[in-house]
Image (tube, rainbow, N blue to C red; front, side, top):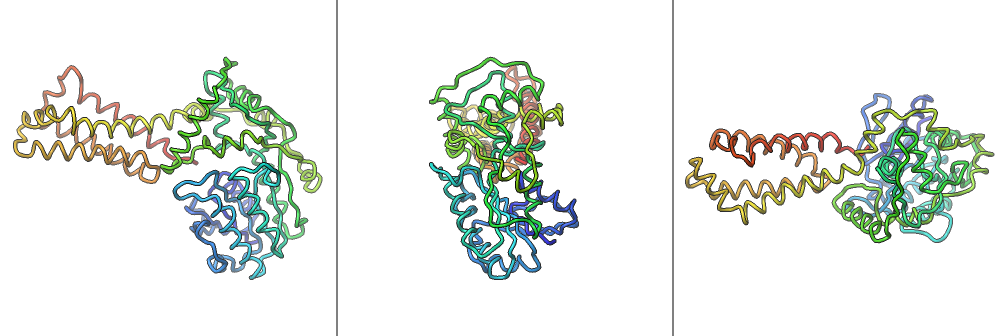
Amino acid sequence: MRVMLIGASGFIGSAVLARLRSEGHRVLAVARRRGGEAADVEWRELDIARATSPEAWRPHLADVDAVVNCAGVLQDAPGDSTRGVHVDGIDALYRACEAVGVRRVVHLSAIGADREPLTAFSETKQAGERALMQRDLDWVVLRPSVVVGRAAYGGSALLRALAALPVLASVPDAGELQIVQLADVVATVLFFVDPAAPSRVALDVAGPERLAFEDVVLIYRRWLRLPPPRRLAVPRSAAALAYRLGDAAGLLGWRTPMRSNARKEFSRGAVGDPEPWSELTGIRPRRLEDALAAEPASVQERWFARLFFLKPVVFAVFAAFWIVTGIISLGPGWEVGVEYMQRGGAGAVAVPGVIAGAVADILVGIGIAFRRTARAALYAALALSLFYMVTGTLVLPVLWADPIGPMMKIWPIMALNLVALAILEDR
């Protein structure tokens, strides 16, 4: 078959893409940014939230036999719209499918989207389901619980990170979870892509056991082969601050799972009835411990888990370092900076040189703070550090003997810069 896969570069979408290819299907992969260069995959870059008319989708539906929608957004942010992705864009897609005769549609929603009370996230997920169900199509709605696999992103990455902390931090008011394996979700999608499979059904796709949030974290901790932790009850005020910081990071373009919508979803829990799904497909979901035992954790998993919370610290500190350095150069450190320039023989360019360096530092720091510009800013920071080292050596070599070590400190700064570049990617 020729399958259009929406959200093909995401956590679930990339796994579905790999399985479709292995089964011999031809895939038209749709995402905002392409996720690879495989010769047998046709990529189309498309912002779903902006494709809000059937005409925007019609050219992509030629010769398509089935559509699988794996796209999702946790919370509104610059460049991200829950309503645009979950409702407006896909409603236009499904109207286009109805118009051109692409009947088979498999739509991934979220567990609990059919139950009150709804959050801003689950409300748009519910509206997306309704947009599909009112169309004359052979639709299937799948509502996965928290999905985990060997790869990790979003909530699944957060669970590993919490497991790697030196203490067991309890999340206030967290509901129960029925963790489901990524492989089981992918197998379900492949089952329903078949035109002979049942249609016009909505199913919870959930694990076989209800687990407290802390129990899930402890299971992951044992998988990482870490000793039993001390327990720490996180005050609600501290948890609220963490979520607000996550919201602030989201405004800068960073996709952190620690945001207000996540807090509400954690409180709702992620539970459902997996029996109708299992009876219809024959898929028996695996217990979390059994699935993890089949794939023991390696040092790579432990590195990832330990770096997860360190990553925002690295970027926050590094951005603040460059911004504050520039501010100091223009403020309390102004005279010292000008003096250094004059001692090096800068003469008339001493003042503009200090100003230019300070402005460059501030711009680099602001660039690092924003996700979209972070990579370019990190390369600029690396180049600026090398420039300062070479220029300082030529103009004022005595700085190498300064007991405060302004020149020697450039080396750890560049090392941190390289670390930031190495861990920049989200998935």
